[in-house]
Length: 181
Image (tube, rainbow, N blue to C red; front, top):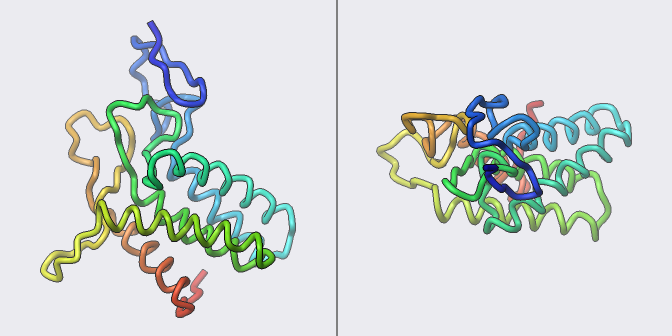
């Protein structure tokens, strides 16, 4: 019997081997997708090669469409089964920062798409996962290291670069960003 997942991805119930950090081979690990959005956008920033911007935008559209159907909350894998629900806010924060980088390189009307999607992601993740307690070390919870986490110790936890990209994205929106890459 097969487990049905979004986008038609099928995995045999007997096959419990992870396919990397996502659900399985052929799936779509969200943090990998987010690194593509951000990395190709930065590559365009540094080279001016339109191929990088085109690729960043294609990756961005995949992430945007995947998160639009989950209330703008990034799943660990965009092609994993619907249950159990596993989020990875690091993917969302990296994607948001990458979308804002793309927004810096496109026209006014296209810019709205990327900026609004970044804001939607930031707001949804802030509402569900942020910890504003100044006595605790992290801000953004809800990070997940990889889909297959048998004891749950690395699922929905704070991850330091989630905080970094959250702050970077907020600073970009406030036009106070510090470009260090």
